[in-house]
Image (cartoon, rainbow, N blue to C red):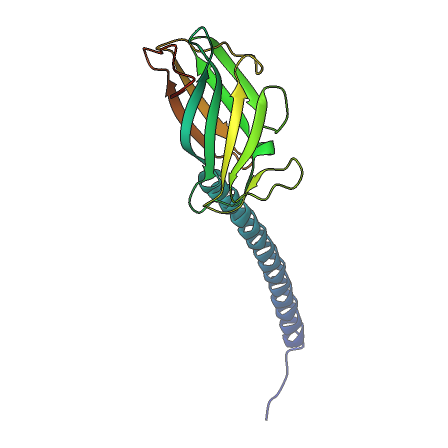
Length: 193
């Protein structure tokens, strides 16, 4: 039925088959590289997303701020009542930093319990394991007392202003402005800031 008179026909078929196999191998290698790169990018995107979410949501909420007044009617200590922001993961105050900026300059320090000028007191719900005050529930409250002179910042006089920024371990920041009342009387032992 079929007559093969030309001896070159088989060689052309083998050459085509070799080129086809080479193209399939190149395509398979390229597909493997693309799949590997896509997997790596997906992992990196997930990690970046988690870090970004933490930087936005894992922050402190300042419930109240008050200052203790000295005999010279200056604010010597500041008491912050702190809670977790809604949707936040647990926050360890020992790994949080505070920055005070005002007319007396700038001072940054960690809010680690029992360091010079800083003390943390449990107000509500926090289970303290040794010196590890961690806010874990939205109803937890801690009082952070900062002695201004002890952390290297000057006492605040009547009418002074200061900006306070708390930065958690995740990198989320909370900022508030403190304003000392323009009149402090001798009867005042503490003032709301």
